[in-house]
Image 1 (cartoon, rainbow, N blue to C red):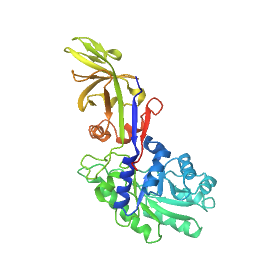
Image 2: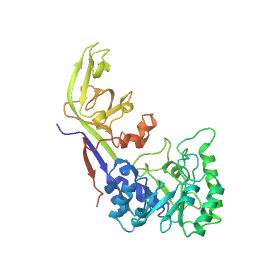
Image 3: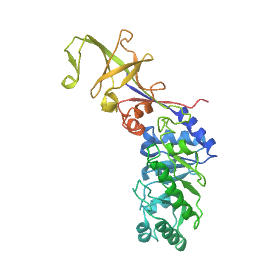
Image 4: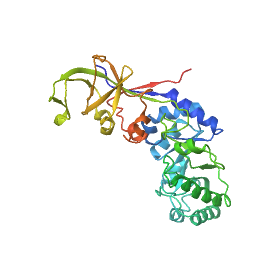
Length: 358
């Protein structure tokens, strides 16, 4: 029996990237953090580069260095502040500014590096918390020959549509802070929008780029998202055995499923050790021969579904695919798109890249 399989469609992420590049007149920063959302950093960056992307962002200096080894003509942005100043200069990594104290304590070391001024917003992981703090940093940079080429934030409420319109308020606060910063400094890069914000608003006025992650990887950021998208992941396994349970008989750890009536089950060669979240199993389904069947049990290397006579030994079973996309289960409350993708085990799964057509 073959291993369970993860297929990654590079053509799909290529199409998603080219679509955004067209809509933004080239203003796309591709987020490739955490091994490009578990798609594989090198393959993803190469694909985005072929599509025309020339600006990339991550949170890992290791990934920044890997990208610089791949391409000399790209802009690499570290969204995490860093103090490895010699390394930042060597690999030409444009890096987030943590706060005013960071600048005051590192004025000399910051020279010869390009920096990204961060607005903390409601995420508050790092960055400026007031317009006054932004203004003081910009003044210090001007007086000390420090290159601040970008300004940015992250919208933490963009995929929510609450009655208080929290995203709208978050956006307006940012726009007010941005206007103040622009009055005293000219930025090459102005980027705030994640996938959900871009889907809602397009490229915001006075912004040079959108900074997208999950949309590029084929997942819709919210249920009613109007954007066209090409799904990019297929996760499948095979029916290992078909068993019958009489009423009262069980299967799985600690009798995780007990038959209430005569029941036919498929045992499938994929489990939580392969990266399936337990929440993906509970109360949800999978696809066999274009039909949906309920999942009822999960083990480390196996899962179990209730089936009918249409299912046979060796049939291919889809947990994710074109007709059963990751974002369907995001909207059903399983976990975020990135959570479901990032746990998939590239060591136990056979990973197959589908190349770009032509």
